[in-house]
Length: 253
Image (cartoon, rainbow, N blue to C red; front, side, top):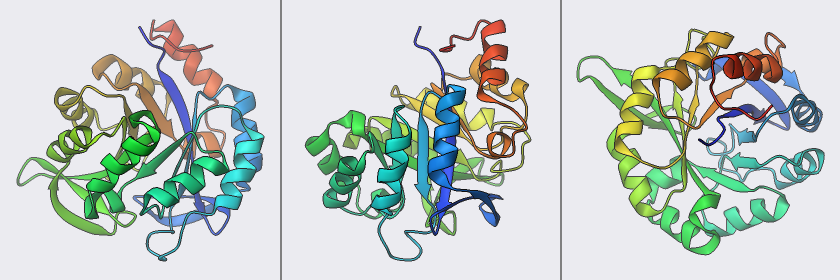
């Protein structure tokens, strides 16, 4: 069985790592390159770098910051934010990203997924899905523009569509759980796992070691992403991996 991945996330705004709750009330955490180097030393399996304001500000992801971060770490680096063309993807991959993540641009133009997969291979194309639960319809809806704009897309149906377009991986964030430290949205990932057979990274809600254990014991996701608990040193990556190993969840120690 493939090792499960523990993945810190750097939400970057104006060149600084920020973190909030439910996508708002951002607090400054520090310099992205320094934080990336610290996570590499801790044994993170991958790193996700999201330029969280790029799309709303109508600009491109900061390639210079990506290049600086990539020089500080040798683990796989996924970069997203403000990517709207194959040229944008190429610029970030040349800057040191191993994979690019697209969300708003994929919703606006699903052909971009196929174009990126054809140019760089499916393994380099991650589609990020920001989802929020609607109890009336018992559905998860897709949001774009950093969680600010609700679409009519059902998250599970959208996951199927992006896979058919050539996405090699999904980064699925529960907006309802984001920054709350109340546990991952197990129901969301169970539904996504039933719909697709590509790697899925779960994001949103990690607050304690048992949250990771529950996620991996109850879903088929391949990666767990967290920010707050690692940034503010409430947990280390080694603590999480140690607990998973003790529960016989395969991890790289």
